[in-house]
Amino acid sequence: MTVSEKTARTFDRTAARLTSSVLAGALLAASLSAVPVAAASAGSQVTADNIEQTDVPTAVKEYSAQSSDVTSLDLDESEVTIIGASWDGADPHLEMRIRDDDGWSSWQPLPAEDEGGPDEQSAEGKQARSFAQGIDGETQGVPVVDAAEVEVRSSTTHLGATDITIRTVTTEVTDEDADVAAEAEPSPSPTVAPGEGVDAQVYHNGLKADIVTRREWGADESLVRCEPDSTAGAKGVFLHHTAGSNSYTRSQAPAIIRGYLSYHTQSRGWCDLGYNFLVDKYGVIYEGRAGSIDRAITGAHAAGFNSSTIGVSVLGTYGTAAPSTAAQNSVKRVIAWKANQYGFAPTGKMTLTSGGGSTSRYPAGRSVSLNVVSGHRDTSYTECPGNSFYSQLGSIRSGAKALQSSVGGGIATGGAIGAYYREHMDLTGAPVATMKALSNPDGWYQHFANGTVYWSSATGAHFNTGGIRTAYAALGYEKGILGFPSSDEIRFKYRSNAVYQTFRNGMITYSSTTKGQPLSHGMLGRWKALGWERSRLGLPTSGEFASAGKTRQNFEGGYMTYKTGEGVKVYYR
Image (cartoon, rainbow, N blue to C red; front, side, top):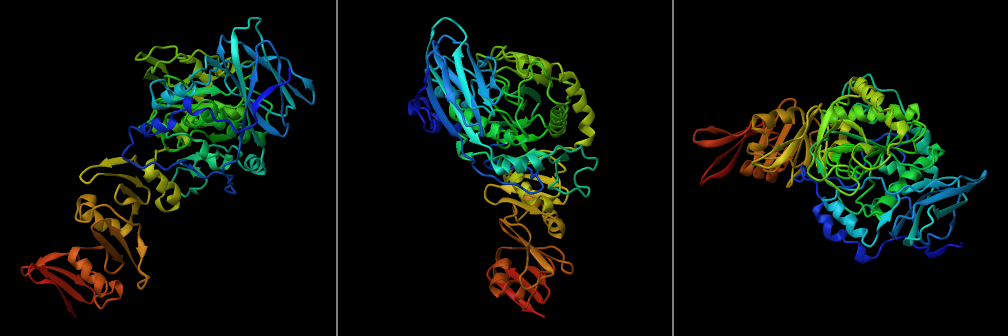
C-alpha cells in the first residue's frame, strides 16, 4: 500500500500523554543529592583533535498502518534510520525487509520491545508509562543503513491489532562522524599508572582514551527530558546488543547512536539514551547516558535491575555470530575499568533486588543472585544480547578480570567536584581517594595527586594545594576560622612571587619568604584599605596571636594590633 503519512513533522506525542514536566523535579540523584551535578557531562577528552559536533538534528516521523497491508517507506540511503512501531490491540508480529543496491532482503522480525526500559517504580518509569498511555505494545528501535526503501507487514493472518503506528528517526552522517571514526581507534591497555607522567587528556582514570563523548558523537542535549537517578556505586554490568544491521560503517556508528538518543527520549519517553555505554564492532567505546563516565548513573537498559548496574550495549545483532574480537576486547576493558572504579569483581556474584515490571523475570522485591557480568536475558524476557554473544560471557568475565591491573584504579569523581576535575585535570592530577562528605560546615572534598578539591553550596568547587594548603591544614581546614575555599589560588598583581586564595571568612597569602599566612576579619579589612600587597606593610609574616593583652599580626613592613574599644591599629617599622 501507499503509506498514509500522518505528518512529516518532528514527532512529539500529545501533551495528554506526556507529564515529564511534573515528574522531572523528582529525578535527582539520591546518593549525591547534596552535590550539584554538571548537566550533560562531557566526560573525558578522547580524540586527538578534540572533535566537537553539537546538537546534530534528527527528524522523527510517524505513519499510520494496517495489519492487513504492507507499509512502504522511502528512505535516504545517505542517512541512518531507526525504525520502530507501536499498536493498540493484539501483537501483530511485525516484520520488515529492506531494499538496497542488491535488491530486497528477506523478511526479518521487527522484534517486540526488549530494550529494557526504566525501573517501573522510578520517576523515569512513571514518566515513560504516562508517555505510553493508550499503547498496548511496541517494538524496539532497529537501525537501518544504506537502504532506499523499507517494507513493514504483519506476519500473522489475524487482524487483532488496530491503530498501528510506525515511527522513523533519521539522522545524517556528518563529516565530523568520519573524523571521529578516524581518530577514535581502540588502543592497547596502558601500562603506566595514572598520575605517573601520563597525559591527562590521553588517559581517563587509567583507561586508554577511546571513549567518544556525547559532544563528539553529536548528542542533541535538548532531547534529554530529565535528570536520571544515580547511586553511590555500581555492583555489576548487564551486556546487551542493540539489534539491527551489522553492516554499518565506522562513520555510521555515531549516527546510529544519535538515532537511539532521539528514539528513546521522543518515542519512548525515557529521560535519556537507555545504555550507559555503547561499543561498535570496530571496538570504539561511546559515552551513552550523560554522566556515565564519572558517576553511577541509573540507565534504562534492564527494567527492574537498572539501579546500581551499568548497561553496555554492542551495536548490531549477535544471535548467530558473536561480536568482533575488537568489540569484545573493548567490552572487557569497560568492565575492568568500572570494576576498579566501584570495587566489584568481574568473575564474582552480586545480589540485586528486583524492581519488577512486565518484562522482568522476577517480581518486585525479590532478591536475586546474579553474575556480576550478566546478560540482559538473565533478568528479562528477551533474547538479548543474542545467543552467540551470551556464549562469550564467561571469557569476557575472565578477560575483564585479567585486565584490571592494567586499566588503573578508576576512582570516581562526580558532581561539581567531577566537573571541576574534568576542566582542570592538568592542575589537580588524578584522583587518589573517593569523594567524602563534610558536616558542620556541610560540603564535600576529594583528594587528588596534587591537592584537594573542596565544595560547598555557598562557595562552589575550588582546588587547595601547596603552601596555602599547609597553612589551611594548620587552621583545621574547613572547620577552622576561614571555612571553605571560595576561589582557586591567584597570583598577586604587584607581587609576582606571591599568591593568595580566598575563603568564606578570609584569605591565605603565600610567598617563599613569608610562607602561608591567614588574614580575616578586622585585620583583613584594614589591609585591604591600605592597598593589599602594595601597602607599606607588605605581606603578612604571621597569623594572629596574643601579645600584651591585644591581638597582633606581623607583616613585612610592620604589624597590626586589635583590642576591643581600640579597633585595629597599624605600626610601621
